[in-house]
Length: 504
Image: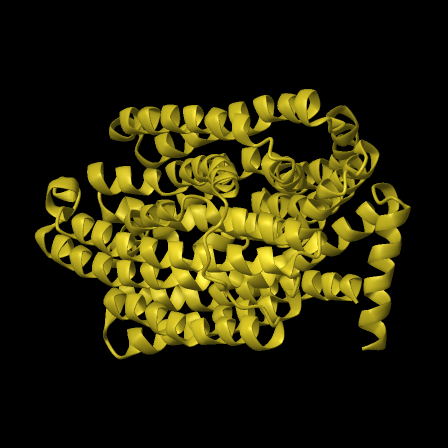
């Protein structure tokens, strides 16, 4: 039953990912044309500023999943429910803290952004931050119930709920935009969707999973252990924020809303690739935690690390190579020539990001082993250095300076240092992993070089030509990878998917 739930969870992840990829292609150009470049940049800037409030979760989301998964593996339901109750109370208190901090940010918009924004933009920024702050506070208790669903490996419900959110969000945004409420309407629509989703998660936990919070004191040793685990998850979250939100905040402070808009479009493609990768590894988090609790051998952990890494590479390599070939044409057709700089932002950040994305399973193993402290500290040092370099380079090189700094930081931290750590401390067979990846990389490299050469003779100036090119590229990629790169497991997996498609 669990295996079926796991497989269906992965399938639903990719259906949701497909919906979440297709919908923005249709929705974003409409949204950009109605909002305009400056207001879109303002909305993105407000989102980035408020995203810092998510740090107030202090990394407890992963802690909930880890400890609930641990107690489930030990068949200790009472401890599960006590941990559930503890975090529910804690997150409600943190939600109040979010509201206070959000109000402080809103009333300090002028001193922070007066150099890059106009007076009208500053006033609207305050309103956006207040609405988004309320939305963020509401998400805190919701996240506890979501974590319980994930920890209980109820992937079908979780993914179906994600799909509902994925579809509802753009519909609600477009309604708000067509009614003339612009960015304020979009922020309000997101809050309304939170109100719809919250009771569904609560009902599922209480009635279907049949688990309720017990509000009782936990042993001090357990609280200390959980806090010790969470602090380094928190540092990791802070690092992600410094990488993905701070660039846009600095651009908003020093350059303006238009620069933020272009940079945000470029980083959107990275978000899609990240979602693509984590949709697989996220499903395996409770399973890997259970393996570690039951002291699985290094061979078993290496096997799942390499197997999932190879599958992630197959998909990510297609997306990244395809974007390299067709990205410039796509952005001009999709967002307009005013966003052409977004292509180079995406390229500079997407390639180094591939390293941690195909090794997501390694991070899951490290967290399950409670060995993520070193990673968090190293990433924090590199992230702070990245912020300093970005602040210095943006006045001279603008959006490209910000992207270049992130590129260097990712190569050093997530590429070089973490691979050494995985190998020396975690015991993962990194040389074997990269031998697998380098062999598989031959096909996408050859295809990318050949296609870029052909681009000199073909002008992609319509959606028809673009789609024909993408379909041809994808089919050739799939055939060549199947013939020359897939192992027996991947061929069986790919063949099974094709059989299901034929019979459906």
